Image (tube, rainbow, N blue to C red; front, side, top):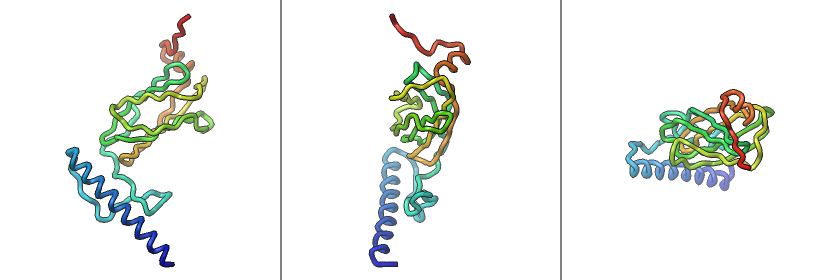
Length: 158
């Protein structure tokens, strides 16, 4: 291993340790008990030098997905220490329709889409990033949702 490689590896390890130390200080300031990890594990599979955040205490668990019109999806979830997440909506062929990083202020997230949802099945993927956790759930497009629930999902004023 060359000197530059060793230096870069040590810098990554130092950065990971500092990140965990700062995270522990922040958590203690907001009243959460925590310990500074000596040997942070598990690691990110894409970048093994970067430790993953701790496992979520609970969740994330998608509780409800509501579709309003063709461009708004409201997600209700449950999770403890789920403060930041990445949400993705994919169509039935796996094509990414919407992706959004969210800093949560409640357990309800409103996604305003740039692309219309059509009459097909979609999947919502909910990945916690402030802690390690994941959930996904299928949901119908707007017309299917109306047929299944018997509720009005879109009102147009004339």
